[in-house]
Image (cartoon, rainbow, N blue to C red; front, side, top):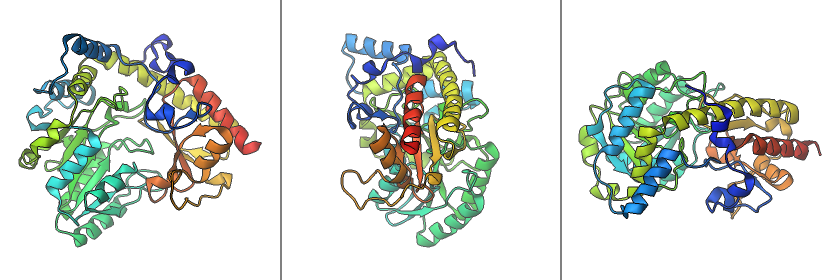
Length: 401
């Protein structure tokens, strides 16, 4: 990774006043006195190549339907440069509206209603919601104490999943949200071996793939031995902050092409043409901007460690290897962790509720991430050093005051 100078850091280019003019959920769900460090939106301007692609499309009135393989070709070039994936299969891709919708549509192809889908909690909450809404059962294989995949737990979960139905699947989070773990190649090879042994199809959510930080290297699941019947879902939305510009790609392993060909045609109608143009530009031309962002995230990761030591010494964490998400263990604070019974605030409990009420800092509540999440919070550090400093300072005052 080439780290750009601080003047190029996208995380330092917008003021708090500018950010508060945004109308996305991050900046409008809570009152103006709240610092929002919860949902996975970054406090950055658009990368210039993305902005130019959108500007050009608007000037041309190029706002029709998406067409062609330029997106997949751009991702293939990026994968070759960044991940040494030289034979990216452009011909085994299809457009989907976003990563989670694509993951569920792939699960519909390889599982039946009532079949089991294994997840590794604590994990991204929509893994539970989308799977159950699709009529599948969730089986948990909790992460180990080191927040990495526990292969013994996964083996047992695959056995239970197989007993529940003939076509089980594993929804892998690679890199892992919320822990920021970037799975190593040997860990993924072990996953593939277990999946093959138990007849489990792997669907890998790789939305955070471009965000491996210094000290870690991302491994695409489809490049490991034994992953031929698996799928990956990829987009530029997290790395380049494009969640509102819908477009993602489903990628099939070499033995899964026939399954992908059964994807209903209407699924590919969901992505926005402007989204496709934006994601294509990001993967094709957004590398220098991404490098500057990664440098800023690396610095913020170090800053967060210092701030926690100074202001919240009883809060523990493992610095993430990737993403811009920090998984903070707040059980030492002694805050009651009972989740509310329901209602508007049902996504907030324990430490997250306390920090919102007392510090006016919005974080994601750990309990919604499944087993192992109670007493934790997820903090998004893709913001300016000034906002991050103010937020953690407020959190420290809320605990000591």
